[in-house]
Length: 77
Image 1 (cartoon, rainbow, N blue to C red):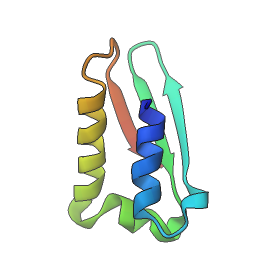
Image 2 (cartoon, rainbow, N blue to C red; image 1 turned 90 degrees about the horizontal axis):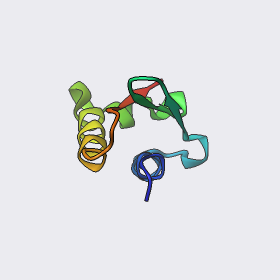
Image 3 (cartoon, rainbow, N blue to C red; image 1 turned 135 degrees about the horizontal axis):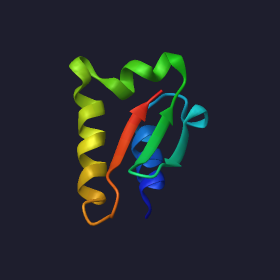
């Protein structure tokens, strides 16, 4: 399972409208950015209270990509 599929799976599990989940991988010269877009009504479910769920998603991605050459970051757009 690649990282974008992992982020998509986690996000779809959290939201009410999984069809609106959009995950894109943007590769730059120094890092890789995973952009996560969800329906505005589901934004709070992905971010969580005080950003705890967003932090957890980032931790899972960091653990899954620890052996990658470039660091991977998750942005919730």
